[in-house]
Amino acid sequence: MESAQEKLLDLLNSKTKENIPDSLSPPLTPRTSVPSSPASSSSKSPLILLPTEIIHSILSYLPPVDLASVLASCRTLKAHALDDRLWQALVQENVPGQKVTESYPCPDFRTLYQAHDTRWFLPKYKIWFADEDLTGRLIVVRYDQRRGCIEGYQLVAVSKDAGMTAWDSDPTISIHGFQPQVALHLDKPILELQAVDTENMDSVREKVKWLSRFDDVTEVTGRNRSGPSYLFSHPREVPISRLMPSSKNSSSSIASLPFQTQSRYGAEIPMDCDSSPSSFCTYMPARPLSPVELQSRERPSFPYGNIWPPPTIPSPHRIRAAGPRRPHEDPLFKLEARPTSRKEISERSFRIRKWFAHWFPAEHIDSDPISAVFARATMTPLYEEVTTYATLDPKLYTPTKERPFRGIWVGDYSGHGCEFLLLTQPDFDEEDGGGIPVISPQREDETDQDFEKRKYEETVYRGSLEAIKLTGDPNVPRGEVTFRVHDMGPEGYVKTIDDAPFAGARVVRSMGHIAHTGFQHDSFIESQLFIISHDRLAQYWIDWGHISFFKRVDIDKFTADQFTVLGPNDMDD
Image (cartoon, rainbow, N blue to C red; front, side, top):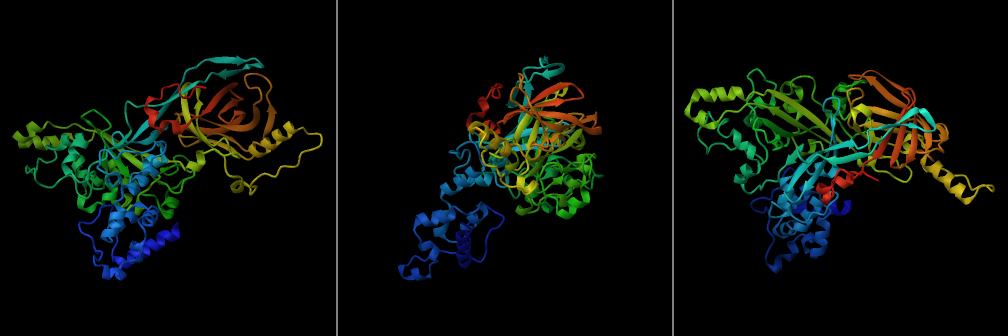
C-alpha cells in the first residue's frame, strides 16, 4: 500500500509544482491541463493512462489531504478524485457501529468530509473521559447521519438493586446487590458539532442559531451589517473576541487577541448544547505537549501537574488541563497553547469551554449608545470553566483470548453510586517477556476435561490486572487506580469458591484503593477479587466486610444505528 501511495505522489509531483497540505478545498482552476490532442498522448503522465478501476484503487489508499491534493493536479485526476465513493469510504473509516449512506445536509460526501474536517477523530475513538472536578465524566461520541452532526452524550448508570444481604457461607460479610442500568443521557448533549454547508455562508446562522444572539451586541461599534463576517478561514470557526468581549486587564486571554493572529486550526467552535440564552459553549482543539513540556510539567502526585490523561492511563501524548485559575487567565489560552497547523491538532484529546453571561436586548442597543457600553459590561462571564477530554487506545479496552478482562466496566461504589472503570491487562511480553504461555503436556493421570481446564487457567490467569477509574467520587477521583491484582496466577491464587452465589469463582489477592474526602491520606488495603466470569467480577473489601460487583459495559451498543432506542435495561442479563 505504501509503495503504491509513494508512486502516486511521485507521479503527481512530476505534474504539479505545488500541493495543498492544509486544505481540503479544490482550487478554482486546475494548475495543469491534460492535452486533448491524441498526438500529444506521449506527454501524459503514465498514471492517467491506467484503467479507471486501477486509478480508483490507487486513490483509495490516499489519506484525505493527499486526495485533496490530487484535485489540483489535472482535469483527469480531478475527475477521479471527485468520485464520491472515495470520500464516502473516508467518512466511513471514522464512523464505527453503523453504515454511512447519506451525506445530509451536504450535497456529497466530499463536502461532508470537509464540513467536519479535523474533527472526524471524535466519533472514530468514541470513548472520551473528562477531568471535570473529582468525579469526572464519560461520554460516547458518535456521528448522527440523520442530521449530519457529530454529537456526544454522557454515559450514566444506576443500580436497580441497592439492597444488601448477608452471605450464607459467612453472615459477617455483606453482599451489595448490583443490577446496573447503563444508558446515554440523551436529553442534553455534551458535544454537538454541526455540518455547515461550506458553499453557503448564509446557512451558518441557520445551523448555529445561538450565534445570532450576539449579532446586535458585538457589532454595536460598527453599524454596517455588510462589514466583516464572523466567518473567516472556515465557516464554522468564529473569532473568540466576537463570542466574549474580554476585560482590558486580561491581556493573556486569547479572547483579547485579534483574530488575524489566530490559526483557524486553534479557533474555538460554538456549539448549541444548552437552550438557556445566557449559557454558552465552545469546542476547543488541543495541542499535545512536547516531551520537554511534559517533563517540565508532570508531577509524581495528584493532580500530576494538571496534565490529561493522567499517568495511570497509557497514551501516545498528553495535553495541559485547566488549572485552578479562572480559565480566561490560564496560560493554556495563550496562542502557543493552541494548534497552529493540521499536524499540531491532537486526535486524542480536546477541550470544552462553558460560560454564563448576561446579554442585552438588541432593540435597546440600537436606540441608545450608552446602552451599548452597558451591554458589553453585562456580557462579562459570571461563571466559566474549561473541561479537558481524552480518549483511550482501543487496545486497552478490547479483550483478547489471552487477556479477556480488558474493557470498560461499571462498578458499585455504595453511597457514591455507579462508576465507570477501565480494566487493563498488560501484554505478557511487555510485562515479563513471557509471550504465549508454555503449557506442559497432558499427564497420564489427568483427564481430558482437567487438561483443558488447566490449559485455560494457565493461559488466562496470568500477570496483573488493574482497574482505573474513568469516573470517580470525592474520595478516590477519576484517573486513579481503584484496585490492583499483582498476579492472577499461582502467586496470587487464594481459592476457588464452592458456595453460592459465587460458586466456581476464582479468588485472587488484590489491593483496594481508599482515601478520605478530597483524596486525602490515600492508601491501599488488603482485599480479594472474585473472578466470576469474563464479564462479571466482585471485590471483597476485607476490612469493611462487604462485597461489591463490577460488570462489563458494551460500548458498541451506544454507537450503533439503534442506540437512541436503547432503554435502561440494555445491561440486564
